[in-house]
Length: 292
Image (cartoon, rainbow, N blue to C red; front, side, top):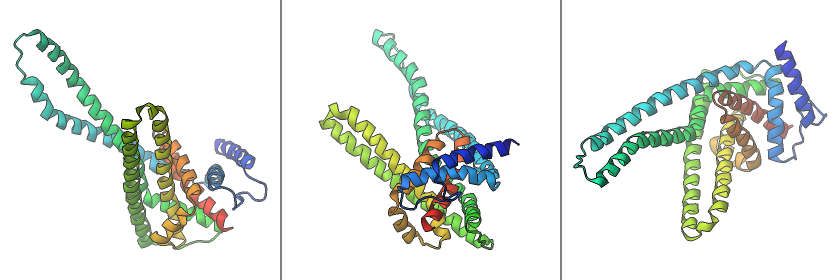
């Protein structure tokens, strides 16, 4: 009953944003951003109507395991680093001078501040890498979901092949690693350029910093959308080189899907599940409408 009500609500939302020509029909000459958003709203109806919601379970479990594993790993890493730093604080000899009292207070504060900063840095690095870790580990599931979505949309079936699934998974992991390197490289270049500008034009920090943040967000979104769209291109028998060329020609669609992916990913645990499943379905719907 609840599933039926949820499906009806999503259908109303989908109909509000989608023309009446067809249930999933969308204009192929519209902007990629609009197509991405419409495809994403359609993905909820599609997922519920065709009973694909069980795919949400796998990334949710993965997100919980990753969070637990990263917490243990970061905690051990911080303790390991502090094992080299703590002796420095313990071996300092105080002679009772007044300035040594100030130094002692600063050292006590540092003993608490350093682990806190190490935790913050580790969490920041984990959050930057987490999207690509999920995309790499979820490659088999996303490949199966993309194939299932295509089967429903085109009413054609492809015989299951374990070798093909392994190839798709390896390709997805390689694409994720490639995108991670490119995104981090471009991000470092942008922030490095901004820092250099700030040395000469420090009064522009309130303009340059927000602009850089927005630019970095869209760069990341492009590569997240790229990873999802590549599953569709692989299924259409495009090699990596042709897939890169195809997605570059549709940057707005890739950024649109990737932006939705990034925003949803900010929601702890649930966002990981929703972003991977709905965006995978949305990518298949969007590419299907472009071919229609």
